[in-house]
Amino acid sequence: MSSLHGLPAFAAYLVAAIGFCALFLLIYTWITPHREFDLIVESQNASAAIALGMSLIGFAIPLTAAIRSSAGIVDFSIWALVSLIVQIVGYGLARLAHKNLSKAIEQNTIAAAVWLGSVSLTVGIVSASCMTP
Image 1 (spheres, rainbow, N blue to C red):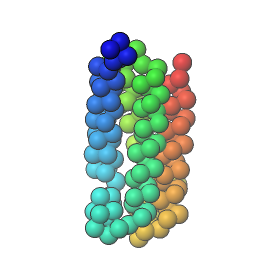
Image 2: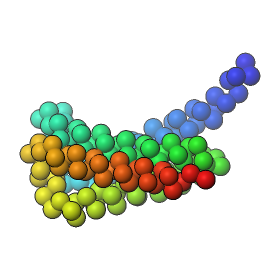
Image 3: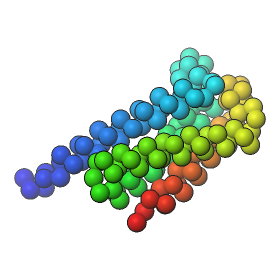
């Protein structure tokens, strides 16, 4: 039974992380000009799936660093919000370098999706490293 003593903390971090992932998806899909879920579900658009999926992974990477290094759930929540902001900034930078990024993703251009996903992963990895004590 002593092995379950960490279960409440596990559950709290898991629920919070899932909640932050949902919040990230909500905000991310709200700020992008293209409608990711419509493109993925209705149009079977691989570019939208790649870009959104890699962006979610890019957000989840610093979440794991925040879970490992935070002093508690409030500290984790603060770093999760910082990670969310950093990912949004990364998206903005990717769009600066590729002026027609959303249009290219709508047209199912894999190169655009890989570009956006790579920027998201890079930003996530770097921000996670910055959180490590």
